[in-house]
Length: 187
Figure (cartoon, rainbow, N blue to C red):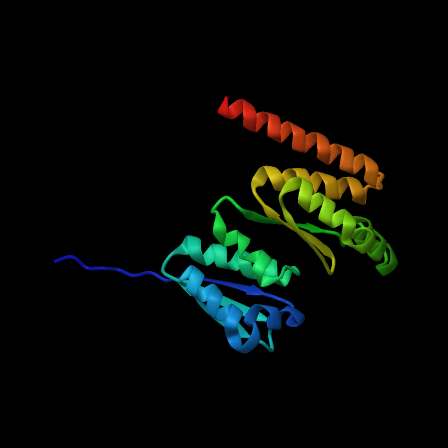
């Protein structure tokens, strides 16, 4: 006689209280959508900021934790859902707290990445195919590994004080290289 053993995978993550609403959504709509798309169960303790994800499939549980982490790092749920579209899409987080000795310096660093009216961030996103969120003391990037590597390099260049024009030239060169590699792959 065979015995079926069902194991549950459980992961938890703590998120800031001001991102709980984004995770839950209006009348629980976002939480429900995440559960439907991933097949996991999510419990949220609004007072503690603790999110518990459980399900039968450990990969889905870990993917959902990354999705929750993306929302907690400032991404809208819609942009964070990109993590579910392709198993190779991932989240990378750059911590700015070690680079800034004061709140004023942190603001300056964040401002360099975002750019006037969000132009710098939008340019990096456009040229790398990533999504970027500058939130609190972090810069979070969603994309494929190669895209993230290029976007992270661009962000690090800005953090080191490299002029925006030079960073855009770097991104343009990387974009052309990627296009060339793609054409070479198919021909």
